Every structure is written in C-alpha cells, then in structure tokens.
Image 1 (cartoon, rainbow, N blue to C red):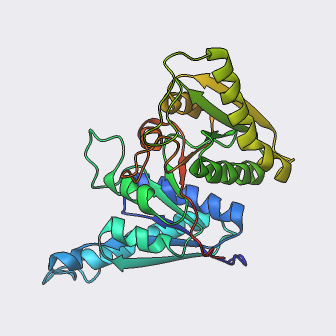
Image 2: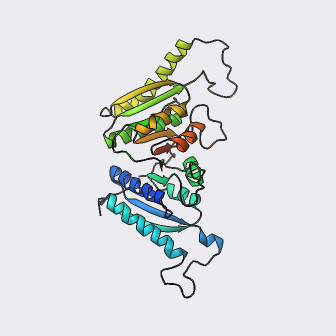
Image 3: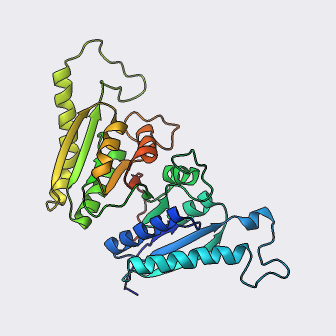
Length: 298
C-alpha cells in the first residue's frame, strides 16, 4: 500500500451498486490528496434487537453481521483495484447510517456518499442519508451523481457570502489537483435583502445592479486566483435561478461545488435551497462545503 497520511477520505457503503460507484470516486479522491481511504458500513441491526449471526443449520458465513463484513470487503477490493497506491481499510460500525457517517466526518478530510442506496425509494432523486449528512457534516461531503468524467471543468457556485467563499477555495484546490479549468457561476434575479429588515428601493438601475453583481463575482475569485495562478478561470454571470444555472453547467462538469448555505439562506435551514436543489438535480458529482471548524484537523 502507499504511504498515505493524515485524515482519511471516508466512504459509506451499503452493498448497492451506487455505493460501489461512490467507492471508486472516493479512491480517486484519496489518490488526488495522497490520503488513506476508510470504507465504512453503518450496521443498524444491533439497534433493532434482531439475531446477527447465521440461523440454526445455516452456513457459518451467513447472517447479517457476515453480510455487512462482505459489503465492506467487496468495497475495499474495489477501491484497491481503482487506486492501488492508496492505503485502504474497512470497518463495520454499529449505528444508523446518518449518525455513523456524521461521526466519521469529525475525523475525515472528505466524506463520500452515493446519491441513493439500498433503502432508497424509486421515486426519490436523492437519499435521505445524503441530505442529512450534507447538511450537518463537519467536513466537505461529496455526493456521487451522474456518470463520472475524466475531463471537463470544476464548476462552483458564487454568491459573495462567507459560505460561498469556502466553496470557492475548495473548488480552486480541486481544479488544481485535477489540472482543469474552474468555472465560477454567479446567478442573479433581482436585488435581494442582505439581512432581516432590509428595505429595497422601489426603482433601481438594472445596469448598475448588473455591474455590482459582476464585481461580486470578480471579487469572489480574485484572491483565490492569486493563490492558484495555475488554474484557468472562466467567470459566468447569469441572470436567472442560481440552482438552474449550476444544474445546466453540470453535464459538462466533472465536479460541481456549492456552499452548504449562502446569501439569503434562512437561519433555521441547515442546507440552503440552492445546494439542496443542485444535490437533487445535478448530472455530476456534487461537493457540499460547510464553513470549517475553529480547530482544523491534519
């Protein structure tokens, strides 16, 4: 195995084909970062009080616990095949999926999930675990959607908020690792209040407002461009829905990056409406980036 060090990339598995797609993506992410990969299966059955071992007279390798270990072993083998240079370990962790993955996020550099697993309903576009974890995890969360691409840019949503700033920084680092262009997308409809109680004018200059939005976009990427001069940047200003603009860019992208919450997000929401919509409808993997903790981990 390779000499990967530091906080691991963690991927959740449940035995589904979608989870194996996530494992392959996680292995590549670990290789990009020169970090180890930890494969985790959340084993909820002990909480249910059901028998975990093989039934009487059944093969010794039967039972729920053995099945869970088989899921992990299969995923570890798939990860090793995808990125042989990455150090890969696996674990079966007792607990509900969302709770287990949130606990894993506390010590992870990146958490990777499939967009839906074995428990997903056919009519749902995104599994509930992916939504819950993306909203609360203490590290960036990559939700694997669509067909993986080896080419195409990294696309990031920009709105000038602090949360957006963290997402932009993450996107620059990803574009640098991958050696691709960064497309910074800033979409606007009408002037929006910056905070509760703000009053907007009844009449405003549309051209002046557009120029202000152009400055917001340019200012949001300027500092990061100086830190990453190797990354070519294309700034895209769109009049329309931010979520729609990002979703429309996703088919050609190898990664879409959004902040967990941005400008105009309601205080009580853990996941902003734009990031929520992109998670549900993008045709590429989506990284959700929250504001970092006060204490950074290695």
